[in-house]
Length: 129
Image 1 (cartoon, helix red, strand yellow):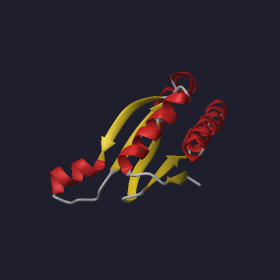
Image 2 (cartoon, helix red, strand yellow):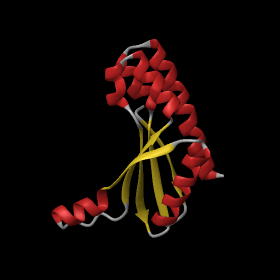
Image 3 (spheres, one colour):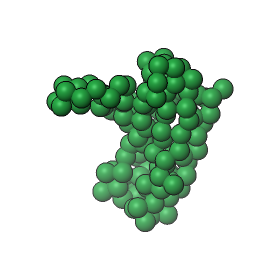
Image 4 (cartoon, helix red, strand yellow):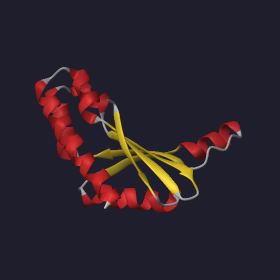
């Protein structure tokens, strides 16, 4: 499966703050933040509500991927989506890095994918506790 996730019983902005805190607690950095809702509103005049794509990175893991196969950097960072479901709930969808990094076909990178998935599962678990 390429994705796993959780629904948080919190409004979008509060959930986004919780996600950011949970990511930081696992010593990940956010290297990209794409506000898809704002882009669609500005470019197409369409309102979809809160929808953000965050790129999370663990520099040590990224270094191992790049060392094993420099072109595999295209598979980084770990992406997650925070999306508004309604006024009181928000979904958080995590890209499964194990599935994505397996595309490289390099055993060392497979190991990184498994580690990254474990870290993201801990982020998910923090959001439900």
